Length: 192
Image 1 (cartoon, helix red, strand yellow):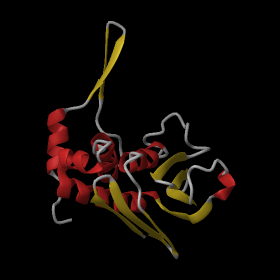
Image 2: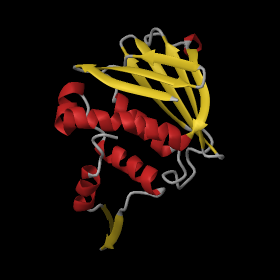
Image 3: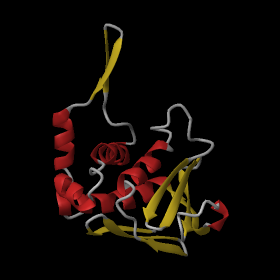
Image 4: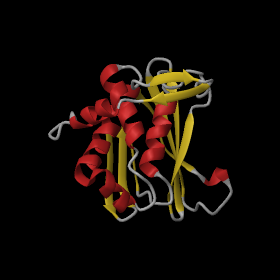
């Protein structure tokens, strides 16, 4: 299994994935929140995060735009702790015919193995560009810090990121501990 995602300039990235004998490369652009959308689509299907079971049946979907190409991501969490990944490539996003898409990758692999590979690349981007530097490089979207922290915490602890829910005067608030978050970020291994 291989997952590579590298920023290559203002608003563009190079991406390559290989699972078993299938591989595919693509260059998403700034018109979509490529990194943030991908992390969220991976997150929402896992039972730790999908407590209502909303994504159990259909899975999650996100797409990357590359003017005019498009890559559709479809994820589904499989009961045996695997993730089913289906990538469909469209040569021209302007066409409305969904039948023109070509399935370029259709594989299953362990969810945690896939997530570990993705987060390894995300950490490298964070370490290379920083939070503000990433925003400058991607142009349109912020670094997906909260989703990254949630997934990283899950991978290390197999549970949700600690959130405190308070109810005061019939209003519900949720909060996290900023010191805990900063300490968690500081634990990122520069040489992992």
